[in-house]
Image 1: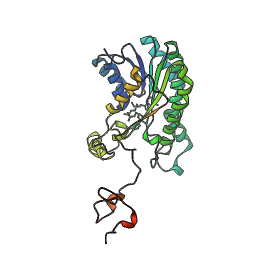
Image 2: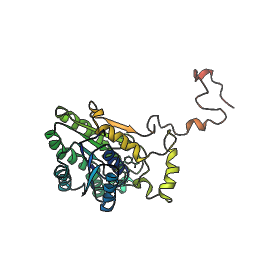
Image 3: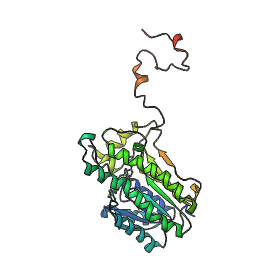
Image 4: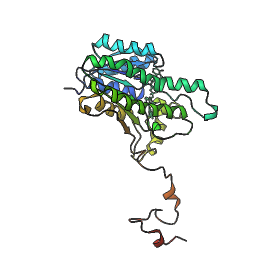
Length: 285
Ligand SMILES: NC(=O)c1ccc[n+]([C@@H]2O[C@H](COP(=O)([O-])OP(=O)(O)OC[C@H]3O[C@@H](n4cnc5c(N)ncnc54)[C@H](O)[C@@H]3O)[C@@H](O)[C@H]2O)c1
């Protein structure tokens, strides 16, 4: 028996990366999945992957910056598979990047339309369908960029922080209807979004990204899909309003940079086993 047997899920941005991995995983657990994306070729390939993994799937051409497209994707899920249990608001891009003073208001608005307004609309139109079937699970992809700053990613960070905040407020309103609202904050994950602009692409990125976080390997789309599966399944029935961080401990520490290594001459700036009162410390010459 699959963990999502008889459930119907809509995933935006499922033609690639994290969304595609989630669609394949959901399908393998018995869900019927609507793949909503701007990229038709990738979306149709994802449908084939889902079917090969044992689930039902359909592609809906969707631009999440358009309100009527989000409505149409939700209608498609209900028409094609009879109900809606899960929406995973995941579509995304880098959006407005670079220096704040060079960022145009237009690019700022376009970024917010895709990364935040689309999440609001996904929640708004999915909730009534979930209420009809006695509850559901709303998942969105935020980011660790929503809880930390990132140079040159002002609009992205602000929009992802908005996703976390909206998750919390929506969870309060929808709890009485047994609709859970959670988001996932991935760390650095090797997907076309992060490796397409790197010379050497996926292969180079996979080596490079391994050093980004304490966990000794690169983050994979499947790491995020596993959390999405938990949030979509009944296993998370009492979990709502949360931002689940999946980042290989990237945000677990203070950003002390390389300070310990900077203490040349001693094995560590912090001492070896015990860091006692500073007046007792013999300063290395
Ligand atoms: N990869 C990472 O390191 C990382 C980290 C944190 C958060 N995220 C977030 O994860 C989500 C998925 O990104 P990914 O890394 O899998 O990237 P990706 O580029 O592989 O996938 C994103 C998908 O979103 C689709 N998309 C973009 N704009 C759209 C629009 N207007 N309407 C419909 N679909 C649209 C793309 O076509 C693509 O299929 C995004 O929200 C991203 O911000 C990614």
